[in-house]
Length: 141
Image 1 (cartoon, rainbow, N blue to C red):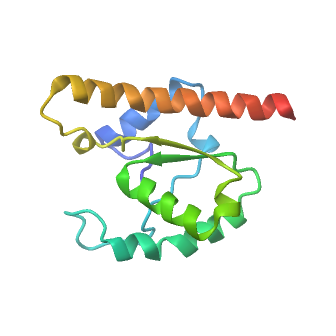
Image 2 (cartoon, helix red, strand yellow):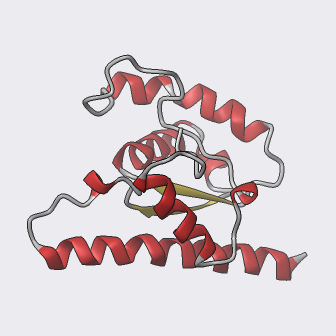
Image 3 (cartoon, rainbow, N blue to C red):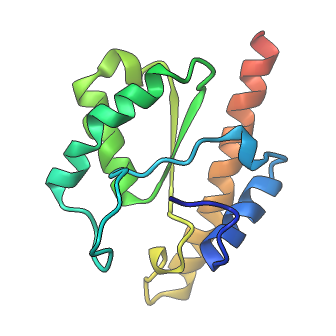
């Protein structure tokens, strides 16, 4: 799981992203597309593993009555959400979904520095989008 208390660059960046929009770790629930331990983490998820993550995600959403927005950090999360939306369109439609890059350093591997910079900027833009969505929700209450 991505945890801001981990001693690594991904956790440090996640803290920066949260702080940039005045959110705290208590404001979110991290979740992986495949929410079980994998012995071999050297490669990405297989398609079957992403599909196996659909039902646990549905159960998680069922116990989160205050869920407002889903942050999809990385390709696997984005693929999972697209599959979830096809399987449960009514549920998925209740939430704003914001796509961005995973905070891990390998997420921006493009050789072009301009592309890497745009990806890094996108991470912060995504968190600003989340802040706007949450603020609109508070205004509506």
